[in-house]
Length: 139
Image (cartoon, rainbow, N blue to C red; front, side, top):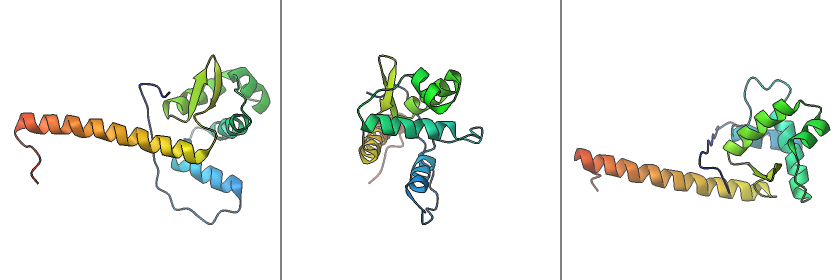
C-alpha cells in the first residue's frame, strides 16, 4: 500500500549502451528520480540495491540493519528510506522495509497505475474547474 502522499519523478534521459547490470540499474534509478546532487556517496542507490537483494530473497530489512550492512548512519538510511517510500518504491511493515514488489517490472507497472489514477483525479478536478468557469471541454 502506498502512502496518501506520493511524489513520482520521471526524468527522460538518453540511455547509453550500458556496460552491465550496474549501469542499467543506475539508469533505471536515475530515470525515476531516485538521486539528487547532495547524495555524493550514492547512499540512496546503495540502499535501493540492498533492498532489491533482500526483497528478492523475501527478507525485510530494518533501518539499523541497512545502516550496519552499508556502513551508513541510521539517520542517512532513514532519510533515504522516507524518500523512497514517498516515491512509492519502498514499503514499511512493522519497522521493516522492502521494495514494493520483488520485480522491477512490477514496480514500474504499479507506478504507471499510480500515475494513471493521479492524472484521472487531476482531470476530474480540471473538468470541474472548467465547468465552473464555463470553459468546458469542446469536442
